[in-house]
Length: 330
Figure 1 (cartoon, rainbow, N blue to C red):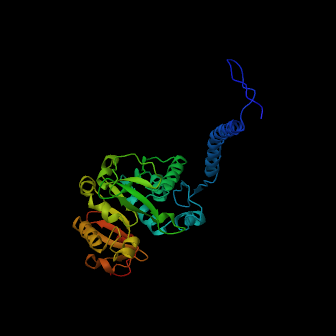
Figure 2 (figure 1 turned 180 degrees about the vertical axis):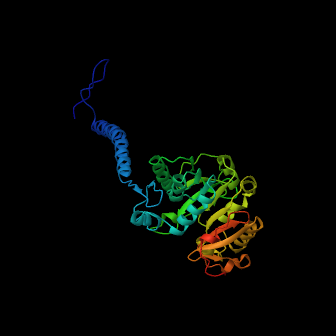
Figure 3 (figure 1 turned 30 degrees about the vertical axis):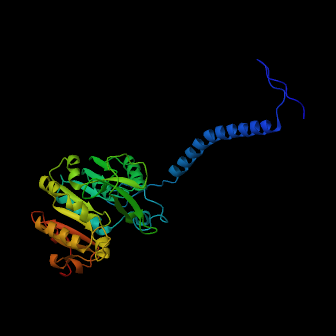
């Protein structure tokens, strides 16, 4: 091997050892790779974002009045998004009842807890009502925002990327059913300070129902609750909201609660479900099942309720009974 010439000022070494050559080549390759990665990766991510955006297909509802909404693909969300894509409507019973209640209380705001992609938020907005919509799931909240930007509602729509619970906390999202993104359930992370910034897409801050008061500028509000069994915890911290607002009706999904009511590790076990019912009854509400059948529900037999959805009607509210067909009393 040829001897190396000592390096002097302004002179390049004419040769190197074999090991030095390999190190130089490796270093050069590493530098080139790093530079290319720095250039290509952001570009690749931008392309992926553009591709994701191009897959967002928004449709017009078949409601009266109609609105634009951005559902998931059917293979992602078979029920809500699938129904909207196929028929332009989701949950015809609640659609009908919500329109009736909003016609009876024309100045009422709407509190949509578990807004998902915004079907009932946008229906109320299209009817001219102010809405506070709460949705914890990140991808659904993005669709909610995207859909809102495509509409021009006369009222004010406030979107909150939050979950609901009985105290400020950090919530971990979890999908329980394949093909049903509307069935996102939550788990409280007790050991995490809720005041810290949330960076993980699966984590979201939880607020209480009392916290919603600052967003409501009406003396009346109609509430829709579809928070996958967390209704019990949410209502634990709601007394100030009920004191400050007249809430004539609460639409509440009961399916998840009754399905898991006898389990110990559920968000709303039997004891808490009974407390929820007693709490609302003491506030002056009557439970009326409206899906799959209309029926007056007996508050003394909560564990026997075979109903998926409940309308809670306040004693001072305009009665909806003339508008519904009560088949029998449970």
